[in-house]
Length: 204
Image (cartoon, rainbow, N blue to C red; front, side, top):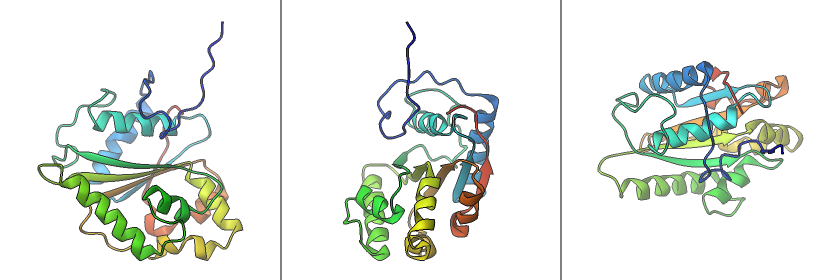
């Protein structure tokens, strides 16, 4: 009998056990992510065709950083000694990223950027209050291209307001991970303020 499996969903599969075998490409992406953190890179774009491993990599990254599954090399100072990581995960859909992000934070979808950032700070502070020291907040947006395509068709300036008004959140150790397919239209729409290193990865 043939067993059929669906593609990895970073939200749905958070508690699932997936037999993830990292490719050399995936290991390289992890090393570049750690290196980027050390040099102060705040955003990282993983771009690859459908089925090349972007979602599975993001799933494995969270498991590895939370010490739940040894996938990549063990943490040994790669993130400047930080050992605690909070993940806010969003999967792309044909909708406004601002609305989806606000709802993820427990806010009304049309909340202004000021409230969005204030709520993000609250989430980070609440997390840190449980730690001895400061952790890192990862905002992970898988299939980000779906949000970009929606914005392109539905008032791009309005849907990118959050990006253009993103403040210098020096009080939050924030890192942003995007994944998307290598669509020329998507790359043209990628907000400059969040553009970081672009890498290709192994298995979806």
